[in-house]
Length: 144
Image (cartoon, rainbow, N blue to C red):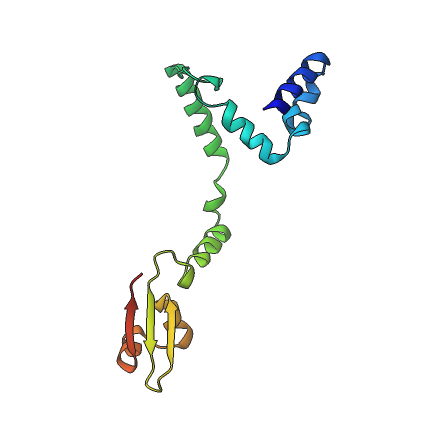
């Protein structure tokens, strides 16, 4: 907090042109570490200290923003709609990476035990169906 007061004094004592207050030249970026900046913003921009505190958007402003966004979406596609991005996202969520994949304990007839997450991908990888795996081995779902 003291550091911020000193920065404000330095900023007020020196006449700094506008170009030094934008982006990386902003005094918050020049004089504070990332952690200090986050802490300062968290402590000094909440509630009544927030510049937008108590203000509301008029219906005209909302309509203008809506039109701007509709126009933007006509001209630009969201990156996640491109086929290569969709495929990459799909592949990142299959098998054990699927957040809803269940864990299974598979005990083979020779006594070997495997614990796997995502039985569908496991079966595809070894080339058999789930039905056949369940007939050949003791398969139990693990609840966590």
